[in-house]
Amino acid sequence: MKQLSKLVLTATAAAALCVGVAQAQNIEKLKQMKVATTDLNIPVVPQAGKNADAIRANLARVKLPAGFKIDLFAVVPDARHMAVAPSTNMLFVGTRKTTVWAVTDRNSDGVADEVKTFAPSLKFTNPNGVCWTKDGFLIVAEHNRILNFPAAEFFYEGPDVAVIEVVPQGKLIPVEEESYNHGARVCKVGPDGMLYVSLGQPFNVQPRDKIKLYNDVGIGGMVRMNAFDGSKREVYATGIRNSVGHDFNPKDGTLWFTDNQTDGMGDDIPTGEINRITKAGQFFGYPWKQGRTRMTDFGYDKDPLPANITDPQVYTVAHAADLGMAFYTGKQFPAKYQGGFFSAQHGSWNRTKPVGAQVLFTSLKADGTADKTEPFAEGWLDETGLYRGRPVDVAVMKDGSLLISDDFAGAIYRVTYSGDAK
Image 1 (cartoon, helix red, strand yellow):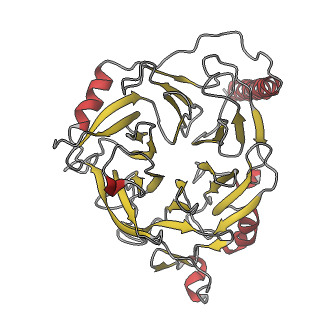
Image 2 (spheres, rainbow, N blue to C red):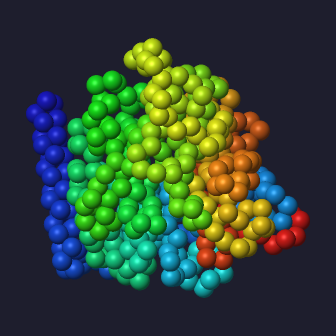
């Protein structure tokens, strides 16, 4: 029996090695624009049937302001962060697994016709973050690698696509700091053309002996770099626990981000945060302070509170898991929403009474700071405490409609405004 177990383990290890070698060979071929696969057929995800019907039925529970309507846009398994294509009626969707999805509305009727894997000849690892450069290159931010795909929206039909390695595997963070905890990256290209990536820190609370390393690398913070070769990398902000959503205000160029705080401190502390970066080098308090709460682990509460903390713009309900956010740049919604931002709350996992599973809207004051935050779409958490869905990200379409991704239901929803009461 022991000998059999050894044989099984040896075979498994050999198979894993072969897969790894094949993937390394594939990316080298794609970097040279060579063929990496012989199967040109890519299976599509069914968009009709019992599953789609059940998702639509659950949407009947979602409450929106008068004049708004929500519908199913696409069935997309494990749908996380979204990148709306700049020139075509499609988008790319990341996951926390091994797939990036290409989602296409071919007849422009407001409902996706096709959902299929992007670049299937590559194997992604937690490709949660997707975003665009100014000239239409798709960035995919994985757990410990960043790839860049030229003209992805025009060349996604086949399994082989051109690729640039911005950050090779194992070079985004030290390999020894890899963890299943807080490994979902998000990315955005800023007005300066640089790529901004958030790096959640692996611990619930980082030990003291990790502070210098993490500050140097940008773990528990945000880094920026050249979007094509990873050069000019620098730590842009620190004192962040785990940001899984950020966006630039197109009006003033400031970078806003959500931040998820420490677990296990009780139902109501610490509050979640939405922050605003106005210049490079700002420090947002973690692990000495989060929300309005001092951190007690490792004696951080005994230290003098650092004087250079930038406080949050918005305090949200504790443990609601604030994730993706996007400034509303469209014209379809009423003037109230233009210039503010939407943000998704994934929903709590560590409260005695669940909260979240909704989309918020935050308006801004004339000086560019946050004004009021209020629920915009709610109802995925039903009256029994059961999740019917868990919003992850929000994205604005060219026509001004709003997309909401949901990794629990495996779907993307589309919110439109008609001006008529529901």
